[in-house]
Length: 364
Image (cartoon, rainbow, N blue to C red; front, side, top):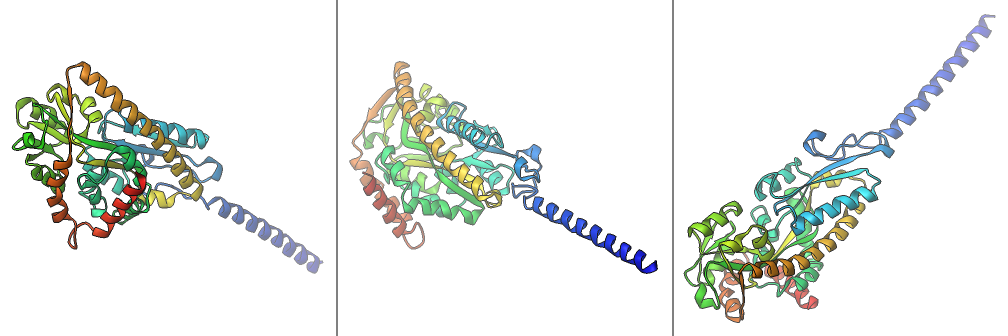
């Protein structure tokens, strides 16, 4: 009898042991999903990513920053991106768009993306030049003849390599959007390079871009975006540049600088960027979804850029703004000193400049 009882006890112990092993396997399978897909320690309320443990219930809640105004091409493109991500993830991805610099200055928001408190951003390559030399090549004057050629050239290997270089500062470059072709909005007409001489022209905080205006004979004055209108109005500066015609419209600069010279001295790409840790934490299918949606949203953004350029110019002309076309041959010759100073062993890699120029030539 004792032997029978002992055999029964051992048999029951084996049953419970097998049941316990089966429970651990199921739990382990469920834990293959990360507790948080953001790669940061930010709480969900701050706008960072939040994901649940169950594979079929993962939710991504992201923020994206744009320094341009509500209704700008960046804003409308990002709203399109948010719509595409939500639709194609069956509601699993929510992207909240913050435009108009509501999350801070360009510098503050780029730092936020580096730290992970902001998930994505669209920002001009010129602003990124203060964080890394990877984007400095795009500050060179007259590198691109127009926006159409620039868009094609930025799909080349040289520009894509500069996106990859952003990983060294904790950022993932996904693709290039557009800030646009620079013009000069002035309180007086500028019909030639000679008429620019001695004028105080607003520049962004970039030594290279300031030197461009100096080479053209102007006096560069570094001003933040929020100070431009009042500075033009009060005569602190005579002109505004390092910006585009659509931006002059949305910021109402044409009201105090009604002469816009289409000098085309620079083209500003605007990389679409993600926090690197967040990107690396995402499964491959989500990464692929973000890339495909970002490509489609960028195409829409380009359409908006084209429409706004034509529409805004018409509206400004109706309100008394004068647009001035100039022959830029002398202008391009004048800025050769900028290439001499910044391209070389201690500056921008000459091979990179040649590679970008080759992609530009192929795009024409």
